[in-house]
Image (cartoon, rainbow, N blue to C red; front, side, top):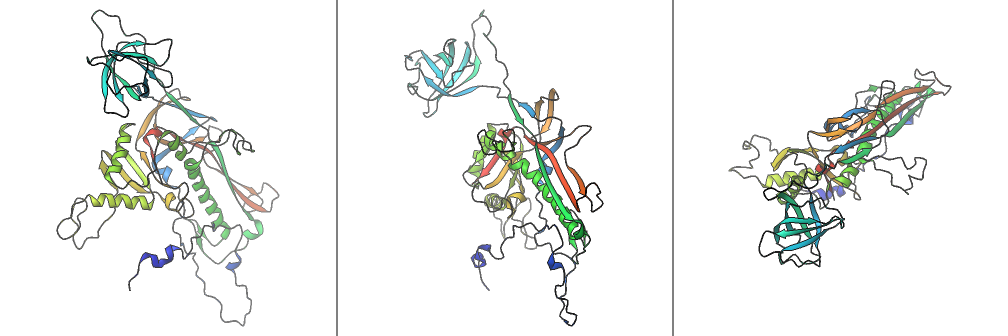
Length: 471
């Protein structure tokens, strides 16, 4: 029989169930509803619940790439190093300069840290024209203006016309014998970033009467809990769902903007916290041209990483489509030996299973590829059209930052979670039981309530080394 994927009606049948299966009480479907003892056609039942969706939890990403560190404050701040060298890309030529031997430049933004005696490279942003010059004066009364004299006898290049966009950076300095030293000095400028922890809560509740009723289906959950009581399954699923929320909040959450609806709500303007996606969009790199699927496109990414921290090892967490695109790209680079496809170190013979997937490759840097279940899950980001994210590139290793609270430089993973804790209170993952059922006896509520709480924030250090892949 022949067929194709389009005969599956675009994989629309069976439909994907997006409704959580946890319940507060026993289900009516657990019991025989017809009590006719003359009826010999009683149903046969399977004792075990079938796990048709496999492991439904997605909480694994941060466990693999981050650490968890306690924090005692409402605000977490850190400093990241700025660039060692300064390059201005928004420089224009003063219209009044003659250009014969000297040219006055104006830096957009009105500030200049060039100093007299330094040597600079000047390059036109659109034309293939450049020059090397000596900084002759820096205008004190006119911030952002400096005058250079050229080393070439031809003076100002022809392409340096008024209002032309010029890039300028210092490559050294030159002084005469007996001259005084360099005037002024440069102070390092750090970038200060901050996040605030958010309080995350959930609750499970079951009535005491329902706890006394035992169903006939043996249930199990992803963390290994089994039993014949539906409320046990529901409580464990609530816990698993809360675990997922803890990770998704750190990835997806956003800062509350002034004047927004949330700022005017009961949460207030001090709500929200910067998640990983927002941190990368604000301070990192965003690839929005579809999945990079050629070496040329990955070369563009490598060139971008060269301009940032140049981290040697990086991990790509991708959805299924992006993973296949990378596999196809790498397979296309492979030579084809006699008798079949040759991947990896050894040729694939006829008795070997053909491995068409790749886990890592080297192109300027080492890239390790891993499927990210969160991006594939049909109940979460899988299948989104608006705001779809196909993957993220995360640098491996640690980064040295100045911890404002500790008062010293600390080694921290690029991604790490800070949770509220001290000697008296630990809010990393709190759970407690209230009510008058299930062993609890602290209220007159005829039910058992299981409460979950955590207070945490995600610190995304060196976001300039991350890449977010969007459609």
